[in-house]
Length: 142
Image (cartoon, rainbow, N blue to C red; front, side, top):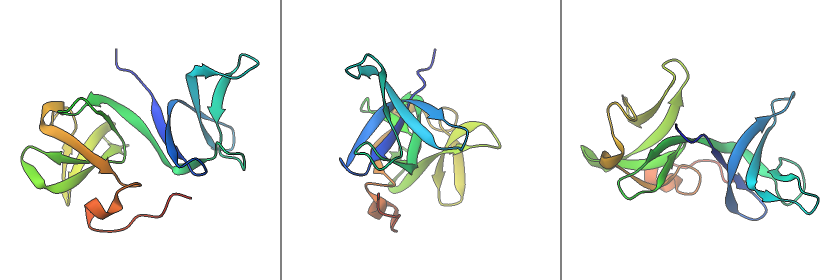
């Protein structure tokens, strides 16, 4: 069975957190780390509030269930090199229409796990920490 988990960037601590995704009635997303418990025994939730655990909503991405050729987990928003185009970075994205993770090189879109397999992909960064790898800029994590 595929492991389902998410990651998001905490803007105050400037680090990535990993866990389960919860979306409230307003559409606000939270990441809950089921491995960490608070002093009162509840799971820790990294919430988008003014507290130190603020999660940038734009950075939340799902684990694809695959690891790259070096064993690193592949998430939505990761920048990868592929075996057939290792000089042009590509982005891993979720395709709502086809319900699959894709790797996009310019106008060419291939399915992750269909067009590219983990042994053919290497994660070199992500579009939030390393926008320069795509030749452009992405909003700063704030």
